[in-house]
Image (cartoon, rainbow, N blue to C red; front, top):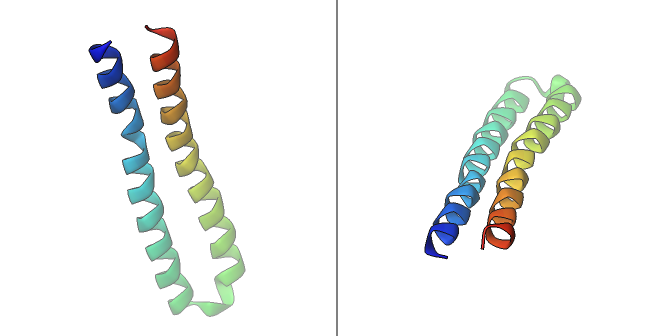
Length: 73
């Protein structure tokens, strides 16, 4: 039981990486829009795509954590 909980906790750490990645990407996008306001539409499209991909890794980690808890008991 305890090794299962440790494994699920490690899988949940993917949320930390996703949060850092989204924060860095947002900061760079704000900086880019400040430098080139006319490119805002393209920058925002790329930002949303990157954030979606980063968030997907966090969701995969959460899913793995849930699967570890329920199927490895």
